[in-house]
Every structure is written in C-alpha cells, then in structure tokens.
Length: 379
Image (tube, rainbow, N blue to C red; front, side, top):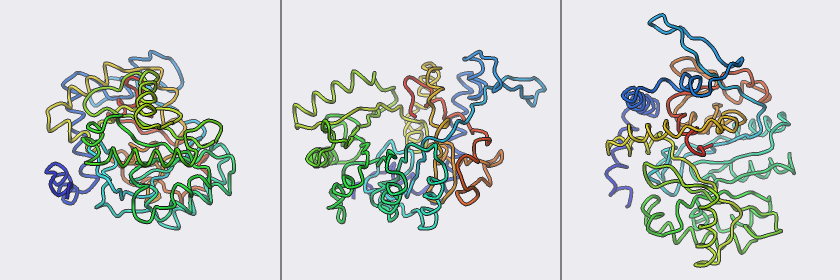
C-alpha cells in the first residue's frame, strides 16, 4: 500500500518497465556527466591523474577526439579478497536511497547452477577471506542458506557477511533465521540509517524503526554484538539527503550511547557510507535539482587516501544472473568485467575457474566513482 501511494516509486517502476535497467543506467549516466561538465570536472580517471600527480605504470596517455593527449590514472586490480554475491533483487522494503532498485515487486533471483559455480570459484580462489552476501533481502532468496552452509563447509575460517535490513527477521518463514545465522557464525552487517524513529521511517518506510529495534534485540539475545561471543553485529549509517556522513568514530560513540541507553542494544562497529549517485538516489537528486550540487560536493571532498581501499581493487561482485563486476555499483549499472565500450558482452562465473583469472581485466571506472573517493568513501 505504501508503494502504491508513493508517486516517485510508481514513476520509477513505470520507467523501468518501459526502457529497462540498461536504458535507465544510460539516462542517469548522462545526467551525472552533464552536471560534471557544468562544473568543469573531467572524466574520473583524468581527474585522478590530476589530483594524485603520480608517475606510475598505471598512468596512461589517451588521445582525445581533438587530437590532444590526456593523462589518465588507471586503477589496478589486486588479488581478490572479497567475493560479493547479489543473490536476488526481491526485498520486503523499498528504500528511497536504494542503489539496487530492490522492492517487493522484483522477482530476479540467483539459480542453483550459478550458486554452485560461485562455490566452485570460492574453493578455487584461496586469496578470498570474505564472502559478502547481499540483495535485495538476501535471506529471502532461495539460494541464501545453501550458499552459507556450503561456504562454511568449504572454508571454516571464512568471514561470511549477511547484509541484513533487520526487518526480514519478522517476515513469515524467517522465524529460525537468527538460529541459522548463529549456527554458521554469520557476520551480520545491518542497515540502520539513524538512531531516531522519524529519520529511519522517512527513508525506509513506516514502522521500520520499531521492527529494526526488535530485530536487534533478538540478535543481542542470541549473542550477537556482545563481548567474547565471536558473533559480530555491525551497523551501517548512510545520510538521509544530499550530504556526506559525519566522522565515523564520533558517530559510532553516539549510536552506542543512544541505542544502549534507550533500548539496551549492543553492537560491535558502525560503518558510515556515502550515498552513491546511482539509481533511486540519482533520481531523487535530479527531481529536486540537487544533482549538480551533490556531484560538486563529492568532487570537492575527494580524498586520495580512499584509493588504496576501494572496493574495485580487491572485490569481485557477482550478480544474480552470474555476470561478474568490479563492485556492487558497477553491477547495478551493468558495467561488467570484460564488456566493450558500450557495456555489451562481459564475463560470467561460467567463463572462469578461479577469480585469479580476472586479475588482468581492467577496472571500469565512470562518473559515479566520485562517490567512493569522497570523504571516507562508500566502499
């Protein structure tokens, strides 16, 4: 009912049906580029070369249409430490900032064959230390429990992350979810964009804050977030609007203070994330005539210290359809590893036997990447 009454959500859903994900990605890329052109900001890799002023093997000279050579800083892929799997786009929520365009209306989900091949890649890539499972609401996808159980059997030392929206714990059929997460020692990273009900419900829907608090209490009761249990519970903050998050350490102190004092909730760490200018958030900014200002904010707050820890450097992200990407954001935009200049083609999990085979494939950067290099970044 809430989605049916939300005109912006309905407009976006209609456009998705009309021009498809690829058409929407192309349209929003054009909007970002126009904003950056008005600001006089060059393409991302040229911007990096200007700002870092390094003379390394990753600096290249590229001829432009006008015949002038420009310097670009091309980011280098390292050994894969994180295998991220988007197991499906269905979600019991439809959040205003969602870069995945997830909602209860999305039905795309990972098949048995793709999930099994992902486990083969995990087995054959010993450098992987983290399996990061996301969605949608990953726990509501058919392959979630199979992947968790198989991964734990293959790699007892693996950090298995569940990107949890918390309200999923109250969904029908998920009554034993906490018990399952404990059994397989799954690391829960949960979204809680604020410690106040008003702000959370504004971004994520009516009643979400209360349900999130109930879920956190249930996780605490099972040992999550408590000292010496080995069950890690981390929270994620992202801003409600077109601004950067505050300093992570200071905000973590405030979160811990408020949540323990008001609700008796404990957790391990807080991660602050910059909202990426993609999908619903780009649409949100554009309709309010704020996209140019937000891109300017990201550019002005460029932080060269983020470059060594960008997601694209040590992560391979796999879509529900088996396609492989440099990061979750490229995945949602359709910028696959091995695609051509117009993002056609690309590699899938069935084209490789180990993620080591992707090390020589170039990282695909574009104008949305300013989000991962602003402030403390979004990786």
